[in-house]
Image (cartoon, rainbow, N blue to C red; front, side):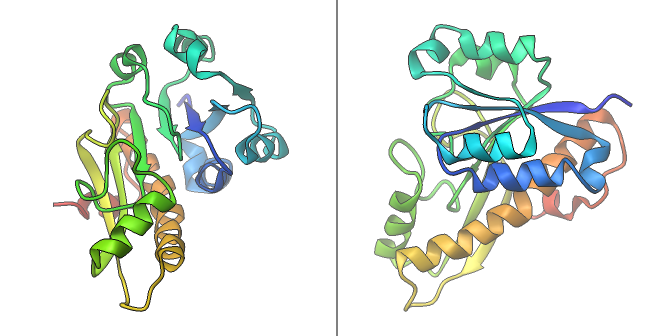
Length: 208
């Protein structure tokens, strides 16, 4: 069976990218897919160094080039089958959304539909959760469409919050969930699309 080729779009330090690259380079995940390309909209980003360290092809594409169709051209040239967003701060171009419908996922650091939409990323999300005095937070994995954080939800994982938790504490708890679930959920989606056995599909049953 030919392995699926995954592209990761990221804008920051790349800890979720690291988790994905690790999962699909060793263990059961490597049976079905590989991370073939990492793309960032920033010239300087920690995610680029992470990709280089692992020997994964990486590129910088500025926002204007992506909007002019360069992102889709690169994805096609590199024979990419799946796209995973991991802290990617730009709106994905419409042509890419259309070409990768139900083959492109994003991870959001809150329980959508709460605390999502334009400007809700990173610590902005965790500060909003803290301000709202939410008793739980978590992570949401969803299909990507042309609107920020509005694609159908694939999976949600929750974590209990303490009244004494700071936004930084919330961020730490949620990031642990992201690293735990994102690689396994993506693997499960790819396995289902390929018609292969899902190793552990409990992740895909956790969202009502």
